[in-house]
Length: 530
Ligand SMILES: Nc1ncnc2c1ncn2[C@@H]1O[C@H](COP(=O)(O)OP(=O)(O)OP(=O)(O)O)[C@@H](O)[C@H]1O
Image (cartoon, rainbow, N blue to C red; front, side, top):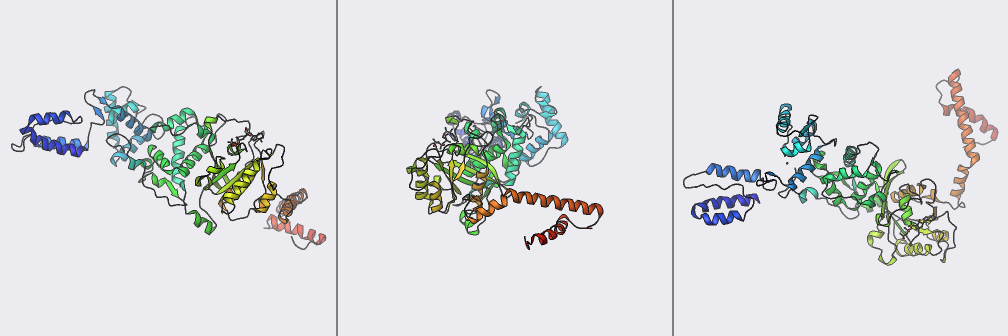
């Protein structure tokens, strides 16, 4: 834009010699002119000045920043500089200390300031205003006095910066990588001023001050974990970022852009924060996955308990009511599968049977929820299963919700248990959130395990009490066996201690000692092997 203006100025400077009228009309229609200077190529009048101003117009355009008539910075410039100040203020104390000033300097000009130069800058501010320097650092006022970051001529962050190119092939998902979580952790620490591991409404507001709009609505508090006061916890905060990255990666890139991710982490763009996972079909072929976020869609008839199931994942029981306009159709939290931390994202699907979209059906595991107390609710699950999931590879789990209430006979040709047996599904899992404490989370771990290993038959979930597996499990869990195990341990332990004490079994561990104890027992009981 400025380049064009300069070329016009050059040509019109020539015109000036010939037509003053034309130039004055031209200039009055151009609001951002820098200077008007008479010059002549013929007489070499003011030629160096002309090039000086032309260069200045291109390199340091002041038009979008400063209003010469009012002699003050424009509001958009102040807003933009305030954002830069907040991004650079790494400890969020409202003052740019020497380290933060140098971070800013390095980001803008690729080199830090010498200690003396830093002092000179502060002295300039001190001389011009009283509250520009505090605790030997620059306040926002002082910074505004000095002034400029990734902005275009309109002082808006440009689209290429906010939305760097990121290719996501079909059947792949998007997750935040380790460095991105570290960055977000530092942003959280910066704004959790009272160090209570949760963000109060004021702290959330402060965190998003560098955004042009508030990205989180009240529904976020019903999507992720909160503390007793209803404030988003550290875990909840990371979960919300994980959710945004999974559902809308472009938005995540934009948000990271506002927070200055690429500048602070010295990355080419926010795209460096994202891991695009391997195609799901390859995961299925290889029977293993590197993914950390799994999606579970919850389907069920109206009133069957879907929302309660989502909320229970955040540790909330039936007592916690939510406002209809604050309701969220998602909830996300962490679970542990074989010692690995994974995110499980639950999505409540609207029960309108005829409008199930591809998105409603695409997930890693499906939950079909029916209300044990409502004789009409199982029919919906059976219908959905038969129409959409019977022939798909997506694992399904039947949830018998409100299991604390009386179990009504379902108006369907098969009982839920027989239906599951016939379709080789796990038996319906009884579940309720009508509890005194936080509802049980085992079911969510099972769902994550099914999502991670869709091909594996999770026999441990079988509760039929009839198959060999259930009988073995019952024996293993029986009180008698538990007592024998405990006795065995205490004997082994005391022998070990005793051997150490009298040095009777030199260099022998507790297991070796235990063998010495158990062998005679086995002989006597005629059991040859364990
Ligand atoms: N164990 C329970 N005992 C009694 N009432 C329950 C129990 N669990 C949930 N409810 C109640 O059942 C009602 C329906 O539950 P919920 O809103 O979770 O179902 P939903 O499937 O999400 O409904 P909708 O399809 O209308 O969104 C709620 O009023 C809830 O408080």
